[in-house]
Image 1 (cartoon, one colour):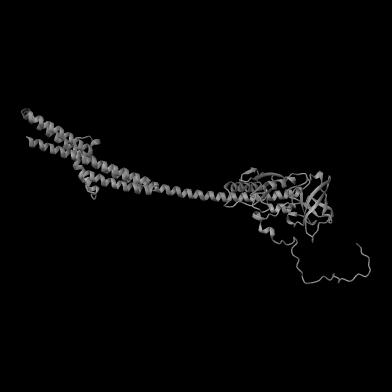
Image 2 (cartoon, rainbow, N blue to C red):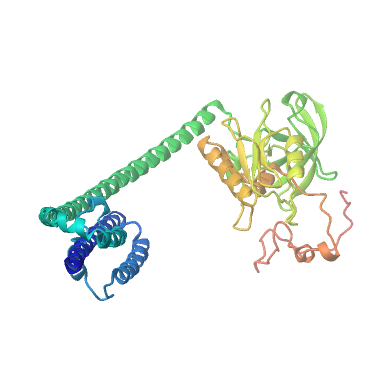
Amino acid sequence: MARENQGLQIALIVFVMLALILGVTTFVFYRQYDQEKGKALAADQEKAKVAKELDAAQRDIVELKRILGFGASDTMQVVGQEVPKDMQLAASLPEADRNYRKLVQHLNDTIQKKNQALAVAENDKANLQKQLADKEKEAAARIQQYEEEVKKAGADLSQMAANYKKTESELNAQKDRLLTERKEIEDKSNQQIKSLQEAVAARDKEIKTARDVAVRYRDEAEALQHTTFEIAHGKILWVNQRTGRVYVNLGEADGLRRLMTFGVFTSSSNDVSQSEKKASIEIIEILGPHMAEARITEDKPGNPVVPGDLVFTPIWAPGRRVRIALAGFIDIDNDGRSDLDRVRGIITTNGAVVDAYQDESGKVIGQVTRETTYLVQGTPPDEKSSREMRRGYTDMINAATRNLVRQIKIDELFQRMGYRDVDRVTSFGKGARATDFRVQPPPEGVPVSSGTVSPLFQPRQPQRGSRSTY
C-alpha cells in the first residue's frame, strides 16, 4: 500500500514539474517576445542602449538557465523541450500559476499534505482499506482529468507558439512599413526644405532688387528736391591770407553756430562727396543773417583758399537737423580708448542730433530710423569683442540697411566736415606711441624736381636802381 502511494506521489510530482516547466517556458517565451519587440521599436534611435540591454538580457538568460538547471550552452530549443515535461507536474495549477516557483511551492505543499495523509493512513488503515476501492476509482478519474489537462496545456502551448510566430511576422512587417514611411517622410521633408530654400533665395533677391530701386528713387528724389547733403551749403566771400581769416555767406538765419567746422572745396565741385577737400575752417563769429567769420584750421600752401570756394559739412544743413547714428568702437585719436563722448559733443556742437550709439559695453542706446541721415561706423568688433558689442553692431548695420540710411566711416566723416584734432597732446613714457615721433611729410607731399626749367624763368639780375614796390 505504501508503495502504491509512493508511486502516486511520484506521478504527482512529475505532473507538477511538467506544469512548472511549461510555465517557465511560457515565461521565457513571453520575456523574449517583449525584448524583441522593444528592440525592434528602439533599434533606429538607441542602438547603443539596445546593445547594452541585449548583453544584460543574455546574462539574465544564462543566469535563468542556471537557476532552472540548464547549462549556459543549452539552447532555447533544449529548454523548450524540457519545460513542458516539467510543467506536466503542475497540471492541477491554474494557467497563471504554472511556473517553477509555483511548482516548487505546490510540490512542497503536496508533499506536506501527503506526509500528513500518510500519518493519518497509518492510524486509519482499516478505514483506508474500506475506502480503497473508492479512492482507486477517484484516482483513475483524476488521472484521466490530469491527462486531459496536460493535452489541453500542450494544445494551448502550440497555439501560443503559433500566435508568437504570427505576432513576430506582423511586427517585422510593421517595422518594414515604418522604415518605408520614414524614408518617404525624409524624402518629402528634403524636397520641402529645398523648395523653401529656393523660395527664400528668390525672396532675398526680390528684397535686394526692391532695396536697390528704393535707393535709386531716394537719390533721384533728393536730386529733384535739392535736399541731398552732398551739395555744398555755402561759399567763401573773402579771404585774408595774412590773418588766416575767411568770411562765408552763412549766418544766423541759416542756423549757423560758433565752433562749427567745414571742409573747403574748389568752386568747380558739383558733388563734394566725390571731390578732394582743400582746406578746413572753423566758425568763430556770427556777423549777420548770412555772414560769418571763420579761421583756417588746415590748408595747403600750394592750393590756398580763395573767394568762391565752397564750404560743406555732412552733419549740418541750413534749416534742417541732420541725424547721426554711431556704431562700433569710436576712437578718433588711435590711443585705444573710447572717444564716444567727445565725438557726440563734436556732432551736437555742429548742429546735428545723435539718434543712436553703442555705449562702452556695446549696448545700443537709441534707435536707427528712416529719419537718420548717416550711420557713422567706428572700428567694427572682432572675435575678441563682447557678445553684446557684436550683436549691437550687427543690429545697427541691419537697421541702417533696412531703412536706406547712408553709411560712412568716421574718418571720412571728420575729413569731409573739416574737423581737425587741435587739442591732441603727445604723451611721453608709458602712454607714448611710436607714430607720434615719426617725421611726417608735408600735406602736399615731398616736392621732387622734374629736372626741367620753365621757359618763363628768368635768371636773377642785380638791381639797377629801380624802386621797390613793397
